Length: 516
Image (cartoon, rainbow, N blue to C red):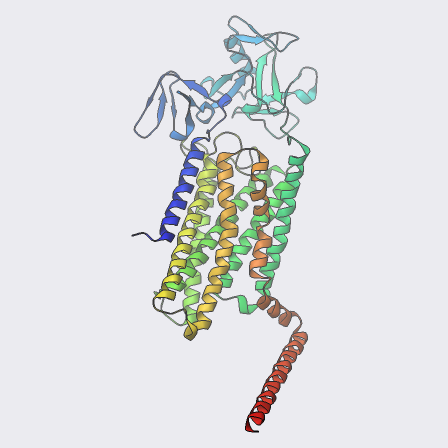
């Protein structure tokens, strides 16, 4: 029969899984405007879909249902170029109106391939989407024949690029069309998306400042553990690795938040790999600490040797796991991102293409597979380990009596470590669970304001949990001001001695009175 703790855990886990599944079902792998309606198709047992009309094959994460219809993210299967009007239309001179034109599409394709695309581009490499793109702000037209700044070309992957600029523009943000003259092809672009109001713009700076503040407190925490050898036992070394990873991750995020406009292209591509590795490693080290506290309470001794030798061996095993798994994830990311010609079903991170992180445009599966997915699995594992440890503590209190006065010092230390790591898990776990849910569900910024701010201030919480304690402050005073520490200790000893003498004197008087 399940106990109340097990029942609560099962209900909580079921709720999280159902919430994640329902949220994931609402996440489309691409914008509707970047998809095509598939009317004639065949779905295979492995969920792969064949568009028999266009002769295109879609992996399960490359198409989605909308109502009773199926739409395919064609730009995930082929390179795309967007045409502003329907196939047999063009834009009338001096207006933005699409009007019919006989044979317009064939002439349009010829003009595009001859004048805009690289010479080696083949006709069958590209799919032409039709219709004006949806823009978050508004649109503007280019006049390349009148302004040198408006001259542009199309890249081999279908992106538009100004000749005078380096940053390409995704197909969801532009369309090209004949304007009056058949040989004259120009483009209509979306204005760059900006914060919808001053409050959202200010929030971006608030998040960046919060991350910098966390970076400072995390650095102080790491420095305290470096200065105090008393804290550098196995648990302390694991915490130092965890905190060191968070320090590098938050520092990298702060650079991205504050310097998006000025970061060079190579750095914008490199930093996401650093963030990917450091955040993954931080969560793997948190998983190690949760496992170790569970191991400690269950008194499992499978490693031989003295206490120091066991700690050394455990640290080697833990390091292999906590550094090796993130390194493996990073290697897979590098291969998927930088290797050309991989199958379409392999998610590609596209670091640095549209932001200094996973590409926010198009397929969202890479960030789920390589980042949020592993983190979610680790958080669930940590929750199971903490519930197991809590149940063990209750069992030992009721049953064997291990946690009593005879073993008070040892049990007290273990319980203190458990409480510390439980607080750390709550700080890291709850905020990141909400981070995953916010990514899946989306919604306006204000919905996730509280969790986002809490996430940026994790460094402050870690400092308060592990450093701002009387014991650590006393050790720090003794380390930095040894003379002052000795004076305080002598004062305490003198005060204790005086109290002891007063007690003896008082007891003597009581004895004398009783004798009289």
